[in-house]
Amino acid sequence: MGLTLTVDGDRWRAHLREVGDATPGLTPVVKGNGYGFGLGRLARRSAWLGVEAIAVGLYEELPEVATRFDGSLLVLTPWRPFTPDVDPALADRVIHTLGRVEDVDALLERQPRARVVLELLTSMRRHGFTAPQLWEAAERLRHHRGARLEGVALHLPLSQGSHLGEVRRLLNDAVGAGLPGPLTVWVSHLTRDEMASLRQSYADFTVRPRIGTDLWLGDRSALRVTSTVLDVHEVERGDVFGYRGRSVPKAGHIVVVSGGTAHGIGLESPMGASSLRDRAATLARGGLDAVGFVRSPFSIDNKQRLFAEPPHMQASMLFLPSGARVPDVGELVDVRVRYTATSFDDVVLD
Image 1 (cartoon, helix red, strand yellow):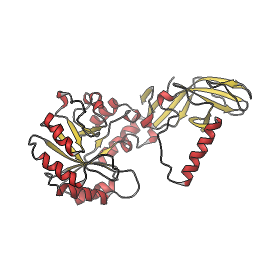
Image 2 (spheres, rainbow, N blue to C red):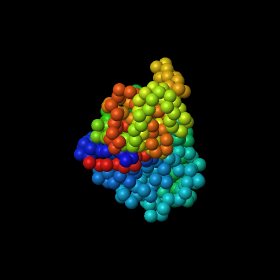
Image 3 (cartoon, one colour):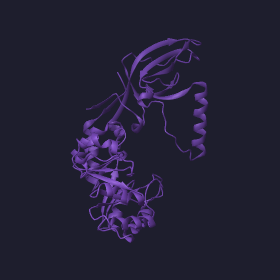
Image 4 (cartoon, rainbow, N blue to C red):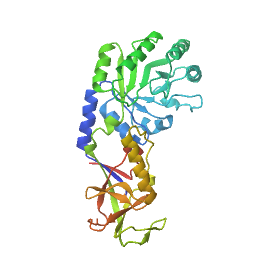
């Protein structure tokens, strides 16, 4: 009766296998809500792919994946002195990300044999060492003989255009800092052609692509999200409905469907409006919201229907105008969602 993700298992597994076969050194990203599938399921599927390592977002995610995947566990969020110590049983499997000079000594004094990657500051400017800081970090590493350097990490932006020039500059910085080679490069958001070019230019390096969305969600045709029709009410113009006592603008039906704010329905992350068209669309949505007419992600007869009012915690009220086919209670309707921001009541793998 809830919000359900149904997966065409054969098609999904075929896509995962195709990506795995085409991506040497693949490091699946298993973080957050597990791209809608759940962390545990993706950890098990990573083991099925036969990869050597997976990447999690937070230290807090380690317990859920560690029992389902036996390989190395790269934590993408950089280590900080306030980070809780890792379970000793996992110490040899966890790879810490370092991005500040002062954290090199702080971590290795607490965990002398820690496995670490050094993150380089890319044009994203989120975390990482600049070239001078990398030199200093490398010098400090040399004083911790028990430390196990697992390579360098690069998190690149999603902007269009090739990243190869930036990657080459950063890798030259790593070589210049005197990091012991051959280096392993953990990198995200490169195309297959860029990966091939990188491997050709740095043949003695090991390249480990970190892939999340394109792996787990790369074949959307294998995925279907549905909601259940819970109730249907015929209404006339002027009838009052909902939490806020709004009046129905014209005759039709109120259709109550499963899925609300607790699932992520109706919640959007901020997006940059990069063009006049984007900004106009944002203004239009704001105007619609002001009068209560907002397109919902729920589709009935292949047409996205309007929210009658903002979604509730676990259900949503839609307005269906007179003349449209009225769905039956218990009928499934399709829903467009952002998988990384949606919590499903059930995931059905066919």
